Image: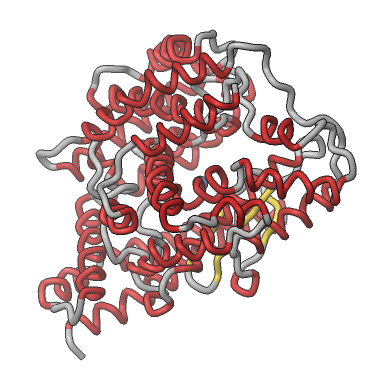
Length: 487
Ligand code: ZN
């Protein structure tokens, strides 16, 4: 066997084991018995130890030094394996262990602090998380930028400077858009009770319409919707709220976007590094374009309005124009995950700037709540009323996820580019969507983005699909047209 073949055989087993570890966490979030948590922590810890040892095994370094790629896909495999290996060996083992231990403790403390609206109670452990993450970033960055080294984990090749320039140009336009859209009183959400079994049936139907393959996937309920897995086992979760059927429907369609990406990757790459979504930003572009540009569009709302009335009877809106406005309503909220397409990005920019300041040493954890509240008032025009509506709302920082938030907005930007290219390629898009058939759109996304997995770098995937380098302009034009007409 050549060094390349040996390396790929070894990688395939590592990938398989990591899929098993992923399925353990899926199980934990969906069907695991309540009394099994302590044992599961040991099981997951043991799996992580095996995986860490495999990822840092010196033989990987030897194979990488000797391996020659047989083709372009092989070259991409080597590029991804080399990147992961170099990152894994740069972080000292005791630091990695300390971070894993600390973040499992700090997540619990965050949950308690959030329930009590008590940032001061959470600040000491968050300080410790930030301290260890700074150490990790330093180990990874060498002479480079620390925060860039963290971003690189989620969006290889992206830098804070590039993101900041893009976000700074978007912010004033988004602030202006939210101000004009919110000039009147808040639009009411749907009102009524919506049978949860019917919600789940309808969301299953939507998943099928959007191309989710149930022979290689399943939907279960979880507190926070997510998708998990790759290749021939890609599962999603959703949730229901009796008074808000859109929560279930749009969460499902969002996760279907993620899942279709994984299911759509060329099968010859399964259980290899190329056989997964290439970055968080590109992943989010798929979930967002399914959820927003396609499923929240005017033509699709025409179809959905009819389907929902068939399924639930009267739904409390006068006509489909009103329905479209409720689906896309802006309101004065505090919570990122409940935000509309316009305000969502403002939530992300706030977090991005605070993270950057934390890792540059310009902001201390003790001052984080005040910095958050000041910035929120400036961008949103009203004051945060409690910590759980502000600095304590997201789990990410408690588990050490820094550099992750910007990929959500980057996903929106990529979705904007893909949507413009998709519209140019598919003149019948609106007619298809009005008939409840996004099949041609999802086939285009599979052909131009999803099938490649990690074959190209994130920016290159989008550039190839769109015929030009990604910029925020298509997203901004789309948002200004859509929400300008809605006010
Ligand atoms: Zn997502």
